[in-house]
Image 1 (cartoon, one colour):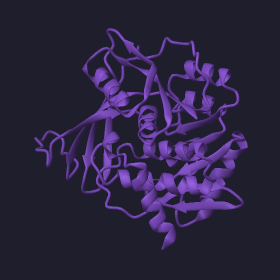
Image 2 (cartoon, rainbow, N blue to C red):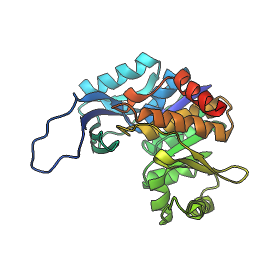
Image 3 (cartoon, rainbow, N blue to C red):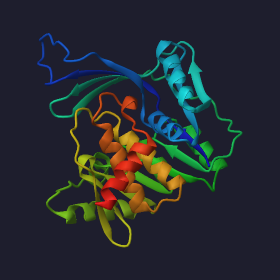
Image 4 (cartoon, rainbow, N blue to C red):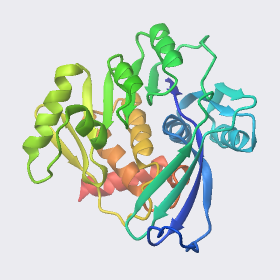
Amino acid sequence: MKILCVGNAAYDVTLPINHFPIENKKVRLDDKRVECGGGSASNCAYLLAKWGMDTYFAGCVGDDYYGNKIIEEMEKVGVNTKYLEKKVGVDTTSSFIIANTSTGTRTIMTSKDAKMKMSLTDVDDRFDMIILDGYEIDFAKEVIKQNPKAIKIIDAGGMRENTIELAKLVDYIVCSKDFAEEYTNKKVDYHDVKTLIDIYETLKKDFSQKIVITLEDRGSFTYQDGYKMVPSIKVNQIDSTGAGDIFHGAFAYCLANDYDIITTMKMANIAGALSVTKIGGRNSIFTLEEVKEKYDELTSS
């Protein structure tokens, strides 16, 4: 199966500290900074290639140090970068991340040049699966047009106009709790499952596609022969950077390999949960064997 991930590529610099910094104070890091490529679609492509899938990435980087590092990382795990453009005179998108290791949460500050946009429109490959993150909308729509039979998935992390437009063209909408709440103007109450059902039904009115709502450390939610809350696993969370991207990559891998939707969500939950036990996004992608081992351990107990 040939897979194309379309969207954002960035370079992440993560600063681990055990408390959120106080304004106008000097802060000494508890550990050295962690650097690696990032970006939702590119992280997804990285995982899929690492897990042995025939994976392409379409997006753009600058012709600079960060851009070259991103390309080097991708090609090292086998991502085909044929559709990855280098933009001369434009700085690669960069994210500076404060990872609060005492809470496992992260704060991301991203710098992206408005000129960081693909100019490429020709696609001479045919793909079996297309994964989108809401960026590079013109290229994304062209790929969808040229590959009508491909399985199409969108990572709806934030509620942007382009994301909503692309969500109407795909088969699977895997959206974050933030997207679901903002789009529906409703709030999730974990003590009342009816709030999740109400949000799901509101989304379903506008989107006929299969919908999965990710709920961070709570797991994920969908409708499959009834409403299903698929719980995540308990871990020692130190940095949640990239966990959603890793969920989406594992989700796509399982669909590509004909797993049923509930098993797919369980595997994706595990991959995302394990990732938060390490510092850095792409650096925290566990191997397929490790995720399967954890899945087997849970299902046999």
